[in-house]
Each structure stands twice: as C-alpha cells, then as structure tokens.
Image 1 (cartoon, rainbow, N blue to C red):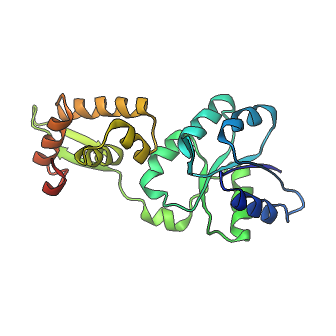
Image 2: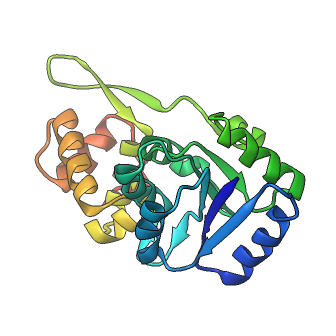
Length: 215
C-alpha cells in the first residue's frame, strides 16, 4: 500500500513514516513542500494521501480540491492536531474521505488508513459527537419567508462583525477569497442586503448575532 504524507513539520512526518512502515505492506512517501505535491500525485499512484490541515501557503481543504481535480478517485484524509468540527462541512465539501487526529495510536492510525483504502469514511467518535445540526432557521422580513442560514454563513457573519478583511476571513475559514466572495454574495441575497454593515444589522434583527458582536 502506497501512502503519501504531506506535512510541513519534518519531525512529524518522519515519525509517522516510521510507525506506518512497521507494517510490511505499507510504503510511505513524505513531502514537506506543498508546491511539489501536485506533480508527485500526477507521477505516482497513492492508495491514501494524508494531509495536514494547516500548512504554509495552502490549507488542507484547498489542497484537497486541487489534487482531486487531477486525480478524482484519490482517497484523502486530514491528519491534524487541530479541532476539525468548525471546518467539518467545508472539508467534506472539498472531497476528503475522513479525519485522523495526530493523537491517534499506531493501531488507530493504521486501521484508519486501511479502512480508508477500502473506500470507508473515517470519522473519529469524538468528532462525530461534536457535530450538530448545521442550519439555523430565521424568519426573514420580506414576504415572511424562512431564510436558511448555514453554519458556514453563521461563522462568516461573525467574522464580518469583527471587522476583518476578506483576506483575514478567508484565512480563518480556510477558503479561497473567490469562494469567500461567492459566499458573501449568497449571504447578502438571503438577507436581502447590499453591504456588510446591512448584513450585520439584519443579523442582529433576526437574532443570529448577539448584540456584542455588532459594530
């Protein structure tokens, strides 16, 4: 089984490589430079790819999308020490097949990789328990329709309320600026507003944002 491990922390990848290659049928390739990953995937067939969530210049979600453009059947797992729940929907939409905490034991790590190679989704129990219903129903004031605000849009509103720039918000939410601009357009349409300030005011009137989050 060929595994690609992508992480900018060399000590982490070397330690993980040693653990995995204690299994006689597992061969691990490590890459610490995200700019070389795409070419590597084009040239070599990997059964499973493990990506860190936060890396210089690109995050795990965007790198997943990029890799799947070239190899749509690739099995990609997020291997991270950070909390996944806030980014769960975004990561699933990017095409990842599951998640492995860096705190996993050797046995848990190997089992997760083998299951993923058999096209099984990998979701740790702790993460599964954190997941909640993703949508908030709010009453719109135009024609009394119900407006559905997703969890991602709720987080976007809260970042807007902090006065962050598009670049800062895209980094926080792990999305490209183009995706952010699209998300803002969709959000403004849902709320029937034309600006950030109006969106925040509308969010207050609908009870989405607490008063202290408003500018």
